[in-house]
Image (cartoon, rainbow, N blue to C red; front, side):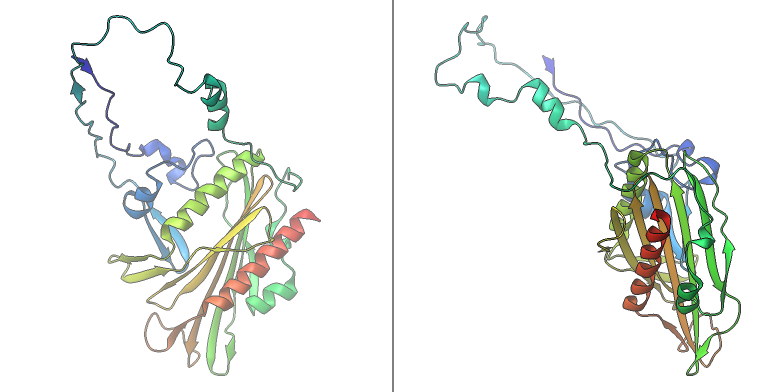
Length: 305
């Protein structure tokens, strides 16, 4: 009796070491795993709190992969003891069959390329957006450097433009915030890997709803959209929750650099901020999408001039 091929094992559970430093960003050496969607949906519950992305990790660490039993089969007893020395003339010639060399070449992933010159350092991100843009998209806001830290091979800096005073128009309190982060990677390949991981996350969440009983709200994720003509590749997605908080998340890859944009918005009638209720209104997708696109375009322009 000859044992057949081993059956595939259950997908591995990501080890705790996969999320170093409490899980700021994924390791640069780690490609998007096959269980990435499961991590987003269960083992790492993703939610948007006040527009920010939160990952709750460490769930499911005790799960043990179970190997399926290997199938077996009997070979027939009347097999010839020797194979014929020549092939029948009716069989196709070897030229019609793929060679081992060509198969291995087809399996190779083409190297990531870009027409953008590589960056060697991250500039001060708060200087990338002109005041004419930030005061229009986030009126009465001030910039403050973010808390991004270098890690996983990338140099990182960020900035937030947050309103410091009420902006009331026609009895509506308009709340707007811009978040921008720039990550410079050692190579184009590293930047593409980071971008693909984030694009895959966006694809997994797009068009879904996620209930978080502990946080008492329901998040709805819009469709993933292409923002053509910005960097090498840019995608964006609109998110809304029952509290009326809305935002657009845009992610850009440009040479050896990735750019993370968030544009938040909420409107409140009567000029008062309420946690939830009839007075709290989401900002329309097209408004936030246009704003996020302007931030992305200006950032790429500032990084390449």
